[in-house]
Image 1: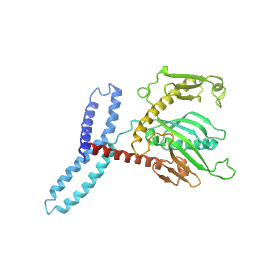
Image 2: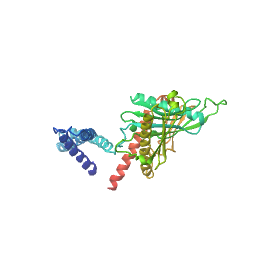
Image 3: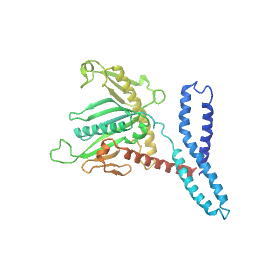
Image 4: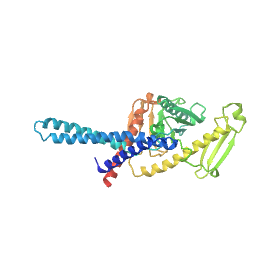
Length: 363
């Protein structure tokens, strides 16, 4: 094991003991926020430290076997033990390297999912509806909650735009690589000559911002307009100024919410989405700087990037970032997207490991 990794693991072991001592104090729960931070850190560190303890134990076993190898009567047994222990240590070391990779602080957050129809008119809007159904079905499989915040339907069905909040453990960690351009190739229902058309939608996945620490919204930098909601929603919605439009003057980001009959609720929702969009803009700027020096575009945050094609005539879905093609389009559109997500996560992890190796060599 590299000395730098061993040193970091030793530090984590010491920190875990320190946390255990702090949690064992009689007044440990006096400050509930501090207590939650400690228990969260304890949960994150414990698996790594336990794995490191297994590695240290394995090293001891290796030394014992090497000493036994000096005895002719025990040599064959000792050599077998050395081979087995070496393989076990190699596997543990690889897992430790993965455990030490930088954690995305947003991974456990809830998300705002935005899907917008792009080129393709009504067909694009229909595809936007199918994408929303795909993510909704996936959320059901994960037992996450989906709440539609805002929607603009098209004449033939589907959505010109839909914004939803998905609440559940690890929502951002599973869906963060879905941001980008999604392209569909098929014969539209409105096509009379059977020609295949290409349409596109844009998907944005944004971690929910922490109201206290992530984004500070200065009231002086906000312009809030109220107006009457349009479309379906009942007499009350259409007769009162319940719809809210919030403009963030420094960035020009505009959010509208009009689905609720309460102006207060629409305003709160709009501010929540605005904070998430500002946080997302900051994240994308950081990711763009990293992506400029890395080969992999997974997680680059480039909204204009075409990331995936759904080809219905051929029954295939292709993710262009990792050159992965799956011939199971019906299952994927029904929410079975784990194969895609797992492959993207694995590729991202491989890239992180390569970067960690380069940094270790440079050090």
